[in-house]
Image (tube, rainbow, N blue to C red; front, top):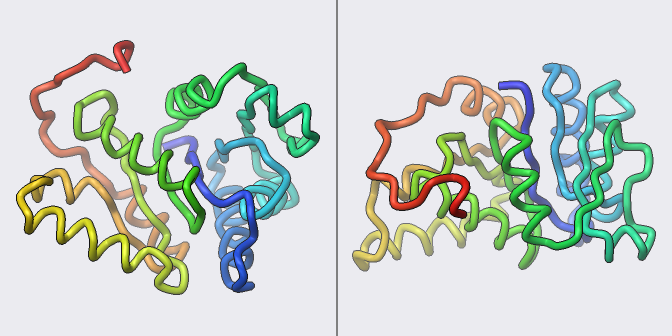
Length: 194
């Protein structure tokens, strides 16, 4: 594993622990020599994780749509800042440039990115670990909903198991680095067909 893609909020949230944990993750990625791949913003939790990684001497690849870069929310001092045309291009490029995915607290965009990448794993488009950092129990209601979806027969347990869960940054990194992909399922689509 050489890089980790982080999905997280463009807002800081109303609990300081969210920003504290984002900074802790940024520093830890840098300390482990892992490149941060993220949405390219300088605001909210996105900015916290990127700034912390950069300050700690880490490599940071930001991928941001042109429309958001024009609004001057791009983290200009990234090691590499890639400006793309659309949100779809952004997600595809981030997925291609990383070896693992992590979601921190966030809103619609974070959930969109997390569930799209989980769906790609379910379909066999990628075989990379996907995890959430359950800071302050933020994702606990979502995890309960996923268990409900399994109970209702709308998600197979093996696909529910695609989502790793960690409560701390050290636990998260341990789970990502020790992750072994399950036997491939029947591929419904190829990576280039996403």
